[in-house]
Image (spheres, rainbow over the protein chains, first blue to last red):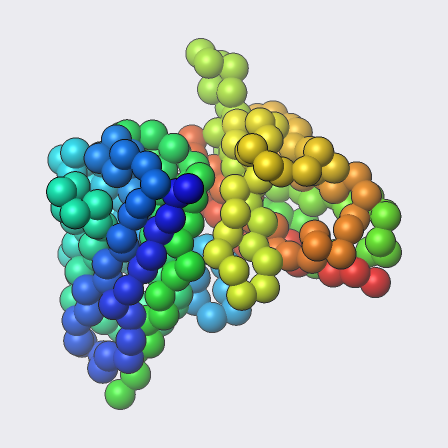
Amino acid sequence: EVELLESGGGLVQPGGSLRLSCAASGFTFSSFAMSWVRQAPGKGLEWVSSLSGNGDSTNYADSVKGRFTISRDNSKNTLYLQMNGLRAEDRAVYYCAKEAVTIGDHYFDCWGQGTLVAVSS
Amino acid sequence: DIVMTQSPDSLSLSLGERATISCKSSQSIFSRPNNRAYLAWYQQKPGQPPKLLFYWASTRESGVPDRFSGSGSRTDFTLTISSLQAEDVAVYYCQQYYSAPRTFGQGTKVEIK
């Protein structure tokens, strides 16, 4: 069974940093692209960033470009999101999502439970 | 960016009724070379992450009840629940993966009357 477990969320001051992690199991992690998708409280879904299976190809939403960095460690079956320069508008539940392909933009066939990031002074 | 617009924003129906959710894209998300529409549907129950229901507009994900169906092409798509059950209470989202950045509709909340 595919499982994705996020961690690392919490309360941070504006301008601060957090690193989210997503531990994956139940599939060949390196064979699939992975993404982060966020959901502000009471709002809809927003794709944030994606990374190819081998880690060579990255994409970012304009809203986070230059502030967030996605990475993965295929030896540990773990996806990361380093978030710097956090703003109030980054407050959201961050979901780790498995892509249906190795590289490229596709649909998300499995989602983690999410981790909440709150930005406040 | 491709804008995805769902209607209605919310839907309140009795058990057993038919639910129809529309999703329109601001440009075609249909690829002629592979004859596919790059559209997915997700269901998000309260307090849970989204769950994939359909991809390629009408391909049902494994385990999704057959009372759910997806259809459409080019810019107009529909998610139908043929007979609404209590467990179908959720917010439903469409998502295009035709071009970057991938974008979602604003969601349609389905409730029981």
